[in-house]
Length: 132
Image 1: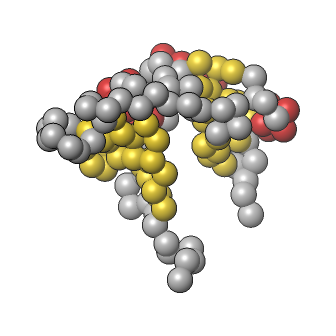
Image 2: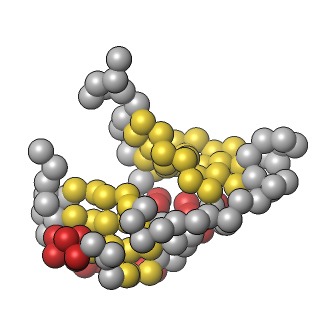
């Protein structure tokens, strides 16, 4: 059964795991939960990032034998509901860690937050609203 205790993993390919890790860990403030970069034939390199003890995480992958080019669209969003105004210093950290501030495809996100593309072009929205 799927309920509020169900753990969720979102997996995305990355051109550069170190750059993606820097953005999500140093920029956003997530932790590295697991890392595999031993270059084992037939296996992906990956970094899992998320909040400690959380019920979700990102798995950022790179297949060195068969590289996959990330193909984000303007509506591939990772939305973080802050419940408070977006901290300008947080946005500056994300940019300093390889992100690019962008205009949202849906104006709702610009009205209620800030959108930053990660190094692979996937969009992170820091939303000032709450989810309830």
